[in-house]
Length: 314
Image (cartoon, rainbow, N blue to C red):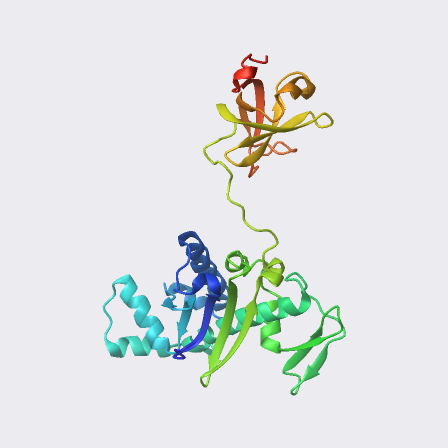
């Protein structure tokens, strides 16, 4: 990172981001993820800060997509004030930025929040999950200011006590929205900057599942809504007597189709033929919940499109 004027950063880096460009939906997820994760730790440290509608400035640079946290609390407040259209004098902004909330300064709260995010990732990678909140056989170091926690491999990671205290109160899915964007060619990096030195944690695709249990899938064919009556053209790719269904290739995706009545065996002559399917869309799962990503088809009949098979099968 060429600019070290910040106290921390959250960024994506890799082959996908050579020009600092990322898909709009992925950027939206990232921004929401950064906002909610930082606010969690900020509010934990000082609930009074919730009355400030602060914003997080974003810096995009070639080679990565990066959210840089400014070093100056004054810069942070100015950014927020400008974004909200407020007119503050320099003196007023500096006074606001220097305000203490309880025993913690404004800048300290932000600095510790990004540090907590970094350590959340580091601890979770060490443990292999984000759900472990109790620890046994701990060790102590640096006058008990650091606590050593052991993973399943018997390795110890020494964590500052205040960080561990924050970690055990953190929700397991704290970084999920940020981790969703990780891929084979895109890493998530969370780092802090102290005396122009960086300390960072990288989350790659190999440990993405620690933070994001399942990839968020896009709904396949959202235009095919549950209960819709449809007529679709595609290819019959298979038939399964055991489950009484068939595969129907529609726009390069294999959908599972069930006959409304009767046995699937009667449709065997249409195997590997292009057909017109008349039926109803179902997105109901086994429990009846309407939440299937890939729609199912309940068909009343099939009409072969091939000239040699032009008789409608009822």
